[in-house]
Length: 539
Image (cartoon, rainbow, N blue to C red; front, side, top):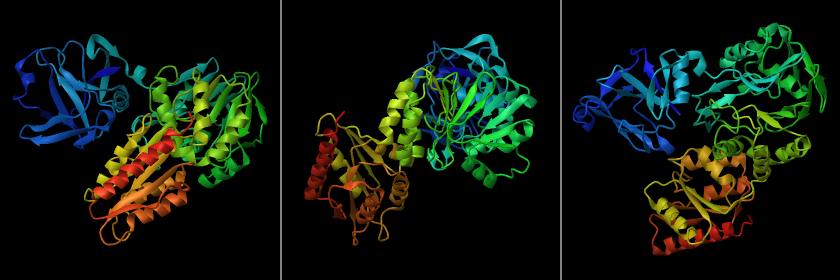
């Protein structure tokens, strides 16, 4: 689903037409591609492919590298832009001989952001073409309150443009999910990140009078959820903060809590809202010490905090409104980069919460689970022990190509074993978020780095530091790399691999300067050995 949006404010854009030499100008009934460059000249296209603007005498001529899709009957192929920063560029279509002039063809989440800045208004799109006269009101396009059931409401905030979450690359944004339970008494469960608390308050007002809210349940003290609590306390004058003792202590260290009203709850304690009951379960180290889950007993709804969440901005709220594979991919990335280190606490939480009858899981990030609960629970069981699949990961960095040659040969060897997935990752072209996600469920790996300044390459030191912090369990692998006069790079990587707890299947495989046929043959055999380890994994 795409939107066409009409630009209202031209003041911040530099207009550049792809000049008259383009074939598009041969047909006056064909839309002309117009690019409004803003601050950057480079961004990401489909599947991470580059979208590059190259300077020309007529301005920035757009060069798109990535998937193309035909839109309706206009006979014009436009790249489908999957991930890009609003501060980079906006793509427009110009219809010279129609009453419709400049149109912005962008993903709907980006359209929402532009709408929020009141720089455009939207029109519905059918097959990439405007349905004339079908204007969409501004308010109708902004994510607002969503009904979970008759008395439970999502009142959170969708952060379309966040791209970093303490080192985790949130390529598709995130949500900060807050919920309101309305009974004889009213409870708000969790807040949002501080900059967006006024949106939360507006959403609450769509459901209830602010003075009628009795409880603010805080499951977790991290600022992406609790950052908005101080302003929420001010906005809800009759509300008492509900949390466990560790959370109260953490909140008191984060904020000035003078004058707050508190209700400190213990394990499995209940709180009656009238006809509905909240019950509280501590889930320590999933993923902070004070973490807690809240259960709505009569409705069988689990407010799971960070467990089962995803960093994923979407106008959809539920797991049956998007492809399950997409949601699970985001959930896997989230687990690998946020929760992976805490496998044992996750297993303990699953054992405790798994005894509850659950019809809906409402996490604090991403999509609400109501139709595929068994799928996400099954994945968490596997991820909690970083259960391997038949996969080999070779991740490397290279200086003058020698370590890259070795990596390629390791991959060639691994590919000789049937039914084994093999991934080659250049860490200088891949974010650590992706690398650690691939490592989480691999069976075996190889880590390659040349020597620089009597150590490994700084980029590999960064990656291994990140991986070591998350400690993927049960992995087998080795280090490799080239050197000039000091055999230190692969040796240093080998030591860090040992520190994260992986089993090293051989000493570092190294070569001085360039790999010869003998070294490449050793790389091939080492890759084959990695694949044989993966092939032995029981499905």
